Image 1 (cartoon, rainbow, N blue to C red):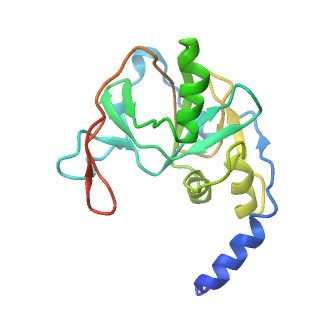
Image 2: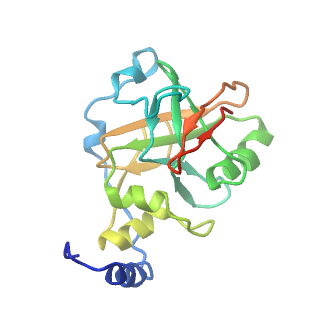
Length: 201
């Protein structure tokens, strides 16, 4: 849209586009696969991860990103935006509440079976995809379809290396991992945008 579009024009265009979701397309090769690290070679400290606020519990590698997980009961893939703090070179701690979509998948589908949950984090994805990951859409609605709607063309996805999860092909960095059933660490505290600090969990 033109840079001088009014808020009303942007709202009207959003409402027009959101009515026409566009399914993604799958590609075999992608820029995010140019360099790969596995196992002991993984070192999260090689990536940009700022200490966002004085007093935060650690460096947050995921602050404007997509967290991606697949529902085991349907073909739904959920995108969300959940903060993740670096614990050590190959562990991160996330705030996965039981009422968020990704938390629901974990607590209802994996935890009862005592199975770790595969997930991925896309860093440096396009702004529209990040925006849709942070948008409150109904459950069982895949945010990628609505990112396509906003962009008015399909989002390109590529398969992860360690799971069947599909991730944005043009993201700069893809982190792949599992949410452990048995390991728990403290996450936070973290300074929130309204000016207060949430305690560690």
